[in-house]
Length: 284
Image (tube, rainbow, N blue to C red; front, side, top):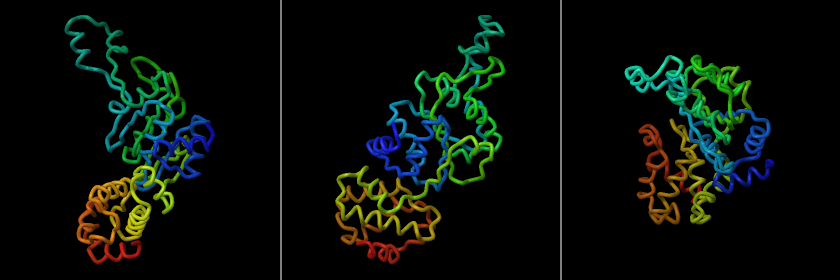
């Protein structure tokens, strides 16, 4: 599908993509290149992979990165318990102990072993150690994995690879060179309203405008954690569930719903009743 068709298809599964992102996804599919999405937490980077897997009607395989992640948890490991049982039963030789029967496939090996190309999400790659990036280079360059006991496993199909990063640390130049790149920022007002209308079509236009206006204003405050799109949608669902039709109706109840938007004690302290009332007053 071309860029416009892809953009419409993403909208059909609830993801509103701008022109830059739609073009990047189109090129990633057309060129078979990994796509690195960088930006603050809460802007919907992970959601892009989910939406793309729905559009392509294929499996989503996710590798959640963290400090200390190694090959055994990301690529493969041997089923040592089964190997030990086979040795005790004298039912295995050295050759058969290191075969498919005893191999545990982790997300990266699983992704290149599928008959139908999946979407491989390598989430928050910047949380993993620099050493782990070296494991990825062979996969992202050649789409193959070397298992010392078995040899090289070449991809059955090439997965669509999406990497996300929140800017926790700088990524290596070698990794960046292998990827297409998009910086995903918080959506502008119109895009965020389109997201809200797509995900919560029952909300009235006036309330939707107020919700987006408040969230956009909060992001301009000096907060430790700016509310993301997910928090905005949670808040909208909470207001709808409480029967709120206008943000100026019940200030006390509205203040209580900030549990959906502000996720640290410092941010709650930075947005007392008078500050929140001022923000609401500007958009109501």
